[in-house]
Image (cartoon, rainbow, N blue to C red; front, side, top):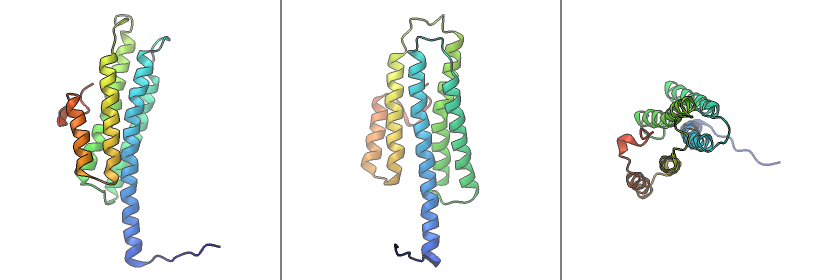
Length: 171
């Protein structure tokens, strides 16, 4: 039988703090994953031979909203975030904006699919895929923040033609 260590006092408090910080990062990474999934679903929608339906993107948006609610709950509970509270809120809002924008586009696309038949959205889709991949990488780097990797992600988004204020407003 493995030996169990008893954790008491300040060590227990530290472990609780680190566990809470971990929950923020897990939720932010889940939000970034949903953003990537929404781009994949948009790709499938635009290249489908069946009549278009935004249902998958709507479901992704609902999952993103649930993740955002969990982040808000943690913030309201007073859990200590790994980065500034305002930064957590801003990042969560920005990440949830990607599926929201793609859902809006998908709904509009399905309404006027006949009018845009033959129009290629591949350049924009490629930009989206590369941007959300970079954002996912940058969110993952929050676990062990390094200036060099943050700068690399920022430079990649700059090369894509996105300013810091418009990272997720390019849809």
